[in-house]
Every structure is written in C-alpha cells, then in structure tokens.
Length: 198
Image 1: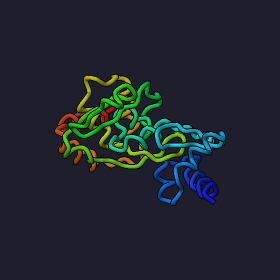
Image 2: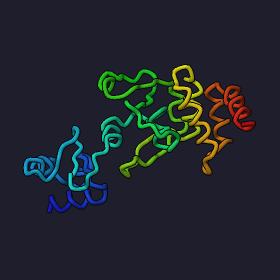
Image 3: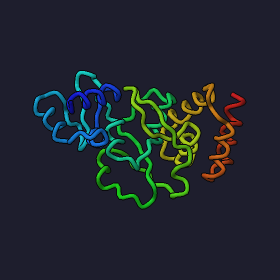
Image 4: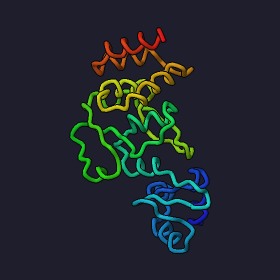
C-alpha cells in the first residue's frame, strides 16, 4: 500500500519524491529508505529521492528543493529563459540580504539583495528536464545584468538584449517599472535606444 503511494507520487512528479511529499500522504520515511536499500530509489539529497528509470537527474530542481529561499538569477536565469546558449559553469542564485550562504557557497554563486527587492519578478520556469523552479523573470534578469554590468561578459550581455527584444512574450512596461525600482532606469533606456537604431 505505502509502496504504491510512493510510486504514484513519483509518477506525478516526473520520477522525483521528497520525504515531505511522502509524509503528506501518510507514508513513513522508512519506506523510502527501504526502497533505496533495494535499489528501487536513489537518494540524491537529504529528503530527496529519484527513480532512476525516469532519467530525471535535475540538478537545478534538486538544489532548489533543498534551498527554497534561493531564486535562480543572472546567467542561470538567462539560460532558463533561452536568452543565452551558454550553459552556466556554475549556477547563480539570489537571496535576501543577511541570508547565511555558508552551506551553498561552494555550489553556486550567491547574490544578496535588499529584502524589498527580493520578490520583484519571481516566476516559475521549466528546467530543460521539465521540472519547475523559481527564477527571476526576463525583465528582472535584464535589469540585474545592467546593475552588475561591469561583472558581465560583454558578448553574453549584448546577445541577451538582442534575444530579449526579439521575444514575443517580453514585457517592456514591466522592464521599465523594474528598472525604476532598481535604480537603472536611465541605463536601460539608453540600451533600448541604441538597440532600436541598430
């Protein structure tokens, strides 16, 4: 009965189950551990298990299951939105100012922002493996790149803007609103003006 419940959850979640999901279905975590011992599941992180038959080893998804306070941003957000073809060498996340990053500092590049800016533009995006993660939307990502321009690769920066402006689902009104909030309105307008005349 419990094994059936576990398999149903796995099926609904594209091969993944968490200890929290099992507990919500009144399944003791012992059953998950037992399935790991039998080779039916693989433990990929604390409280996160996969059925390897699904071939869904999704690093982006697993990291966020363990670190719910982190939002994918910068180069990782560009990649998730199809605004770059370069797979990030190391993923980038944003957290609220004051968040203790010691547990994740070797796994990702962490950016800290004012608490009042943190939630601006958070959206759900599908990873290449088909799982949903939290990331900043395209408009917030473009504004972050402008704020941090000196640290950005010039070629990736320019191409991201060209790709963004060619997207049918871009929202220039939101871009301007975010830019104003984040203090980069003038720089964003200058970029838009230059690209409009190319």
